[in-house]
Image (cartoon, rainbow, N blue to C red; front, side):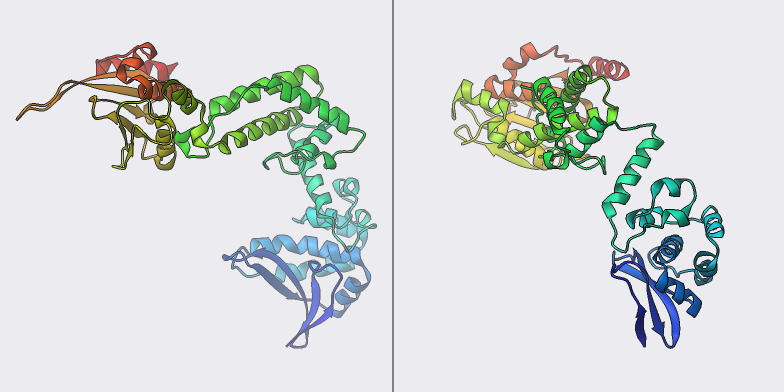
Amino acid sequence: MRDIVFTRSSGWIPNVISEDGELRLMLGAGADANHEPRTFTFPIGQAHLAVIREDLARHLLLWSAVLPLCEAAGTRGLLDEDAAVALLDPVLLASPADVDALFGRIRWDRSRLIAHGADTDLLERGQVCAAMRAATETPDEKRAQRYHANRRRAQRGVVLGPLDAAILKYTGQYLHGATKPRRMPEAVDSALLPEVMQVIATAEQACAGMRIGLDPRRGNRATDKRDWDRMAAAVDAAVRRANPALVDDAVRTVSFLMCSEAADRSRSTPVADDDEAAEDRADLGESGRMTALTFTDDKGAEKKWPRDGARSASAEFWEFVGDRSAGDNEVFTIEDEQLGEGIQLHFYADSIARITTVRHGQTGSDPQYRVEYSLVDGIGGYRRLVSAFVRGGCAALDEHGPWLSDAAEFESARRQRGAR
């Protein structure tokens, strides 16, 4: 039989219960293997209950001291009840000086105290009892998050100025630097908002006309890392020139915002509207290519592109790559069976082979092929080569060389590039 003896308005602050006639402190902490909250209890006495009822600060201090023991129990371990009981008298009944000394020796949860109004300067000085004089039952979780965010920055030697902080709040990265940035002008103090918007305008001007293309080698939504780095560098340089006093965190969040927005624009653009696909259409029209194409990958998948297809060959091919490409599937081929030529893309080696039929197989003999290799510079290079082949076959690739027919010579060139 379990009855609630004492509870506070905030549901997470530990309750006192009576269980089979015994007083126990009950608190929720951590989670089990199924991510369900865990509940722990341990025995307390009447003297402890009296302090918990009358002294919110001591109640919160006890919670802060017990939480690490709950964390130590993990997803299914037992609470060390002896250790928890051993905290009762020193936290609830001892003098403030002794409590401060205790908290200098044990692990305790700082976030709980800060969320419930602890004076952070006093906490830093080890005066935990004095820090809790203005404690509140209702928590302010954002207050604890702000404290820990600034503490992490301080550990890296970063001190934010007013404009730095305002920029991070504008992008939503003040509390969590790993979150995706977004525009939140309502989070910025109105007095600082014009300065923030000037920094944003500088960044927008710096990357005007730049784009971040998709990189189907890493999936349909992956973006070109080179494009991203190029845009980030342009924004960083412009913002630093205009605002040399900004800390790195503030500059990076602005470039992250610009790049993530550009990447989102690319992801929302239909594949058929890709730049290379548009170029194909401009040169050829919908059905300008006279022969069909076959796309294959290293796992045996195949896709046909008819010469009168509704979408360009480039768009269809890169969608095929985005759907199929993986760490163990990095070789893709485009073949023109009628003309007897094709290209093979080796994503793992940043290289390409063009294959031309020199002599078709006769009765009892195999066809003869000419295979030539070339190095490729990133996804942009692959896109140009695919587009050229789609428009004009292997002959259109001549200008994109050099092409090497000796496999050993090519492998040597590839190794030399990798060593640079």
